[in-house]
Length: 387
Image (tube, rainbow, N blue to C red; front, side, top):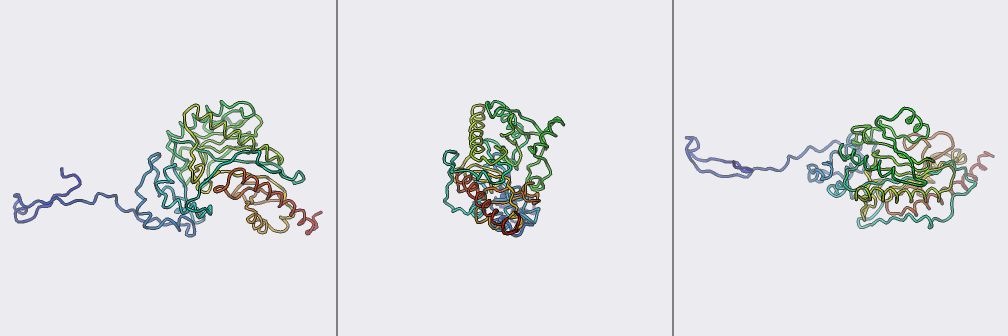
């Protein structure tokens, strides 16, 4: 009956059971302080910026959209010892509610100032030149992530939100026409023949990534996930993988302008189709650009890449290629993906930055950098007597 107050009775009357002096003493109703987590990734940005003071202030907060917590956000850095960043957002609220942690991590990772803003530019007419036709480019691929207001991001999205979002996206995607027209293939109950074809086309995303599992992104797998692609297999959308959507344009050869143009058309068409069906817009922030679950993808969320043979650089040394790409603001990978390692002479070369640059600037950076690497590779082939 005393609510947040405790009744305390003093004096001899208390012992006798009769009415004595009664005081109402306020109880501490604040949530108990949680023990500070053991962050395994000692050199991660999480270890640097999740301090005891910040943790005590933020650890009992639950976000409005999906009930996400700071403990969930930093799960990868707590569980594993190899994280560089080590944090994910469960919804757009996470970036605001846990700003004392996210803001310095984002600023340090992307090299931006506290008052920086982000601008987008998908105007293909501003792209200068293209990749040298003589360069041994196998294929070109450009992808972005996009998320929609009102739903959690993959680490925090609720089961009902995920199912509602999948239904919305399936209908919106299958309403696309022209070059973008195609079909949606849900992972749940997928026909084996369809599954094998998607594997053969290297389109299928699968479960088992320990980071995604630790971050909560594979809950209820494979329900609520799927893949859309057009008839020519040059336009794809992944639904409810690491981001609500990954929108991808790709084709054989090195015509970056054509791939970028199709991507711009696709992003616009998907956004308009979802807006017409639900009234929901892309999540975008004036400071951090397009919102993604991983803060490393904030801004454009764009990765523009080519698969190219670089035998001269391979002979010179992969470590030297990595150093050169760093100078050119590029990232080299093996063709089997971020964690697949490198085999042979073929590399996946992409832009390094996401935030603080427009899409046009990043595509231009990739084109110019790949052309430079190709010319240098010819010199290195001669140096090592490869022709």
